[in-house]
Length: 448
Ligand code: G6P
Ligand code: MN
Image 1 (cartoon, rainbow, N blue to C red):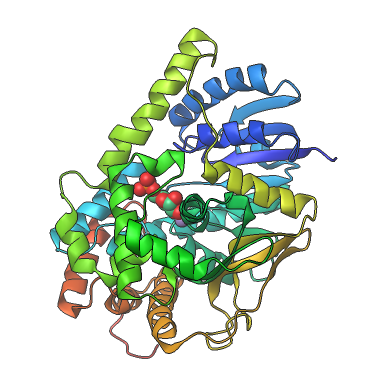
Image 2 (spheres, protein in one colour):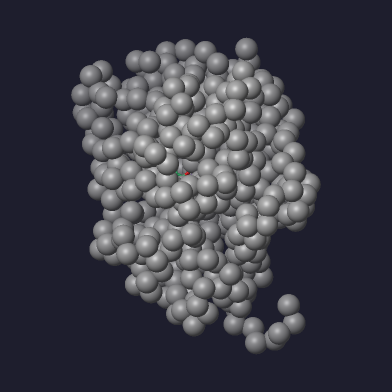
C-alpha cells in the first residue's frame, strides 16, 4: 500500500490530538509516510506538536518523519493529503460573534445566523489563500476541508476554483448523529447506510438502512420520539450543550415527523427558544475555551512534562476517524459511501445546479460520485432555497465587497428576519471584524 504524506493545517486546533489518535488507529488502512503540522499560531501549534511527537514515538514508530512549521513552502511540498481545520480569529472571535448576535436577541452561534455569517467572511480570504498556496507546491494533493462555516467556505471555493476537483468539503455532524442512531438501533455506525439531503448544517436523513438493505427508518423515528435522543460519541456525550441540542432534535422530529433532522436545524426552526437558552456571558465559545480547550492543553502539557503519553486517557474520536476513512476511500479508490458536500448538478433537480449540497456520495480516486436524490418536497425546498440564497449572498458580499449584499444575506436568514435589526447587527459586526473582513462598500447605486 502506498504510504501517504499528510499535512495538517490549523494544527493548533483542539481537535488535533483526537485526530492524531485516529491516525494511529487507522494506520493499517491509511498508512502514513510523514506528517507535517502547519499553523500561523506558533504557540498553539507547538503544544500539540510536542505532545504528538511523543505520542508518535510511542505508538506510530512506522512513521518516517513528523515535523511542524509556520512556513508554507516547507509544509505544502509534495503533500498527498492536506487536512484543513483553520479558525480565522480563533475562539476569541467566535465568542464575539455569539455575544454580538445575542445582544440583539438573535441566535448567537458558530455557524448559524449572524455569527456564522461573520465567521464566513473571516474564513473565505484565508481559505482562498491557502488553496492557492497548497496548489503552488502540491497541485495534485487532496484538500479535505472541514473549516467552518463549511457551507459558505464550500460555496466560495467552488466559485474561486471551479476546475479544482481535488477539494472536498466535509462535516462530521451527520456521522455524529448516526452514532446515536446506531446506538438506538443496536448497530455499528459503519453498518448504517443513510439517505440524506440538504446544505451543510441544514439537512435531513430521509432513510436509514443497514448494509443488508433493511429499512430502520420508521422504527428509529418511533424510538427517538418515545425514548429520547442523546449524543453518543465520546467527545460530546457528556457535554450539556450537546445533550440539549440532541433533545431538541427529538422535538423537531415530533413537530416535523417526515424526515430526521440535522441538529443544526434547531437554530432556524426555533430561533427565539435558542436565544432564551443562552447566557450571553457564557456562550458556547467560552464553554469550549474552558472545557475542551483546557482539557486538550492540560493533556498536552502533561505529556510534554512526563515525556510520555502512557497512562493518559487518549481516545480516537469520530471526527478524526471519519475524516481519515474518507481520505482512505479517496486515496485507495475504495468507493465507500460518505455524506459530503458536492456541487448539485442535478443531484437534486429542483435546486439550482450550482448549489453546494450535502448528500451521500461514493468517494473514489476520481473524487466524490454523488447519488441522485430526486426532487425534494416543497417544505424542504423552501427552507433550503432561503438558506442557499443567504450563503450565496454572503459569498457575493465578500467578492464584491458589498455592504448591501450582506444586508440582503442576513435578511433572508431565518434567524433574524427583521430588516432593521439586520443593519444594527451588521454594523456591530463590521466594527468587531475590522481586522478580518474586506472593507465593505456602501454603494447606493442600485444596479446589481
Ligand atoms: C460539530 C460540527 C462542527 C462544529 C462543531 C462545534 O462537530 O459539525 O462543524 O464546529 O460541532 O462544536 P463545539 O463543541 O465547538 O460547539
Ligand atoms: Mn460541521
